[in-house]
Figure 1 (cartoon, each protein chain N blue to C red):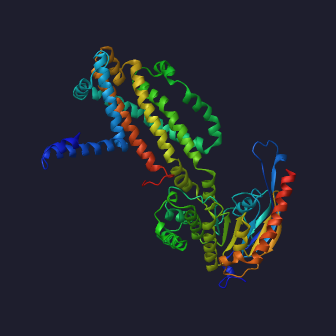
Figure 2 (cartoon, each protein chain N blue to C red):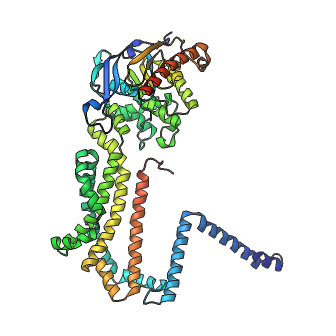
Figure 3 (cartoon, helix red, strand yellow):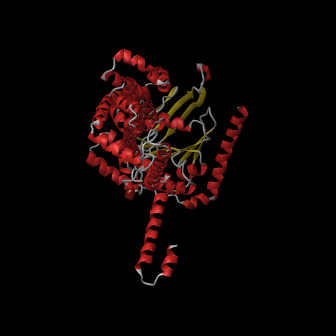
Length: 280
Length: 274
């Protein structure tokens, strides 16, 4: 079409040319969208927004608010103080996750270096790791009430096993060959922990932290939904009041936060991996 | 026949005195089920000698090498280095592993410094010393590379530099070139000889490659299938310095065939017994 248009016009006239230039730019944009990782990701987000908007147009605002309505509700989230509630919830989550790290990493190291500890603790960690932990929430409410301690305990319960299991696997990964090398070169005990065990385990530990923090985030919302406080309570409330635009805005914010946490830790994990060179 | 500049004071003699070793195979429940590997190995290896040990896989030759650096404890018998019994790993011994065993999170420089660090050498001194060895194994341009960025041959040069950097009197090499392609292997064999000819270390070199043993060694010990001791000791008559031309020497081929027929008998016997 563009070439036909330029052929039809007087040579030297600008509109045809600039149209052709625009087409070339569009072509470059399309090739960027389809050929780069960032482009494909952007394309996926655009696709999601289009589908969202279509569903909103089809089902109406009592089912799905439009993208614009959600965007203006997002402004409200930041101006009307909802974001402060989220901040409070995150504080509680990080308190719980701090406990997870303080207990989980040493326990994982212990299971990694000691066969007895491993045999003793593996059945427990595996049983709790694979059981539906939501079922324990009523028990935790009885034990800790409905305050800070309860939320923290839920976060720990959901996240700690990822940290324990990955740390133990990382320490065990410091394989037989490296142990033998350390002995052949007379490595002192402390230097062995610092120079062999720790760097060998580091990428696994960070992987555990990444997965554990994702679970901590989920646990925080579940704990709050259960007793209707904090961010979970807020979602519950705006949901039951059918303020769907606000509800969607909160959901988008939570998803964005989860993705952000994941990306930071994923980056850190890749930096610490040694099977691939750091600069590739 | 010996290297021209050898001063035997730099090496360490090795005496193996009736060494026995067995392992509990996976799943074994009783003492009686132990699998015998070394059945009274004895040898006297003089200082500064390049000794090769050939044998079929699983015969216990790597086990024997580990006993010499106290990485494994024998069931019975003892090993004397320079007349003293081995009880723990020694700074007089450098070990080169078949799978290189480099620390993947350390650069070439960091890996070569590893032993010196453990020995308590000051930072400046160990850096200088490690650099010197990296140059000697021709990796000068790769000091800051990580093992994952190097080829297998280059990784083993690092392994060699790490072992030599602690200035051992005895170098124990466990099939060091076994994981490399044959061209790289031949190049490294020549370079190892060049390094060895510069000072008078004792070298004990394990391999299953008969030609490699003949090309490198002053003496080749032949081990049979487990349980085993040394079946035969072969004095290698070739002049040093040796070059690749040796590989085409008819006498070289004769010795190779002789060792092969010894090994073949042993392997066939073991297969029949199994």
